[in-house]
Image (cartoon, rainbow, N blue to C red; front, side, top):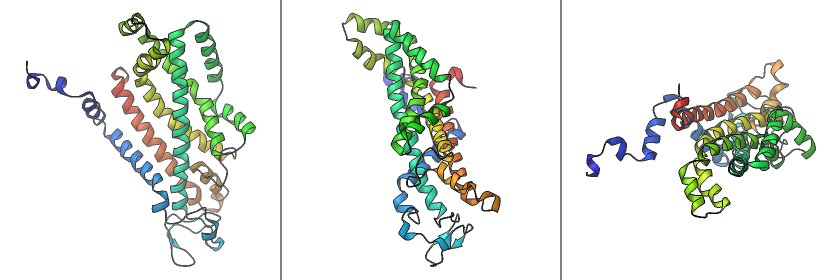
Amino acid sequence: MSANALPAETRESPWARFCAQFAQSRLALFGLALLLATIAIALAAPWIAPQNPYDLGKLDLLDACLPPGSAAGSGELTYWLGTDGQGRDMLSAIIYGLRVSLYVGAVSGAIALALGALLGVAAAYLGGRFDQVLMRIVDVQLGFPAILVALILLAVLGRGVDKIVIALVAVQWAYYARTARSAALVERGKEYIEAARGLGLSRLRIVLRHLLPNAAPPLIVVGTVQVAHAIALEATLSFLGLGLPTTEPSLGLLIANGYEYLLSGKYWISVYPGVALLATILSINLVGDQLRDVLNPRLAK
């Protein structure tokens, strides 16, 4: 039988099928477009931001708390989203804040995914005491609220991007470990694993080359959810004053900076960063929901 005589579903590549199934949801496409636009804006911040909001030489306290659409005292710049209490352009501050928030969420999510997936798959394959000890540690950690664990760690480590990445990895890896272990337990008894053992492959190679790739689909879904959760958690910690320092502001810190001005009617200092944070988390969640439905159709509504 020629290739052209095969059904279209058979000739179609897995990537093409995945894209076609993902594109069935308009909300998911909207979320993906919004997420890509957010990432592009964050990466291009030095070139598209009207002002470097953290260059003290370019700030003027006379421009503090100007409403949206106001012109700078020098007349060289229009503050389309207003300014904050230090005279910083809110549009520029949000663009730069996006960079920090996305960086923290992506880096902490990637490290936690790698660590948790490796430990979870190893626990499923090795079993025995290693599996029991690891799962008890996971159970204990998941029994505490994530924000409480992060607060304790930051109280010890201090403030900074590297410190909050460590704290977020510490509160996220357990989710990946449990998911990876569950997926690997399903794969462990299948024929290809038995064949790999029969060929004399090492345990490390079986875990890395066979079990881990086949446990990836649920981890991808969990990863999107956890990245959004990490961004929201970092914003909460920064709002509480235990996250990032003022020299490395995120969206959460921008919201915190405008909180004291809300009662005086200067809503834009907190509201616009909050809208940017909401849009970022919403876009990631929309993409994650559709990935879940495509990779595991049984969970689709």
